[in-house]
Length: 94
Image 1 (cartoon, rainbow, N blue to C red):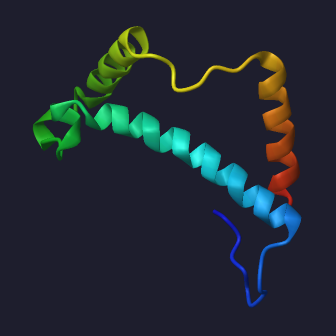
Image 2 (cartoon, rainbow, N blue to C red):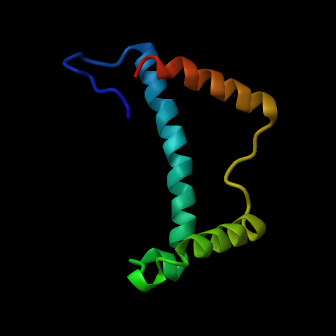
């Protein structure tokens, strides 16, 4: 959760960067959820009778999305390591 101003006129440099990083991460989560919600079955409330099969249904839809839709983002390993380091540093500000 992004930090709030708590009576200050603006965020510090570290708090602003932490908030931006959180926003970037949340965007990917929401984009992935949006892809799932495009399926009519998953865009509505799922009936109780389907509780037994909902996990299989989600896995099936996710497999189709992974196979036929482009990736949301592609990164190389060094970018992942850099992002991880930033997340660990910014975690201490939260």
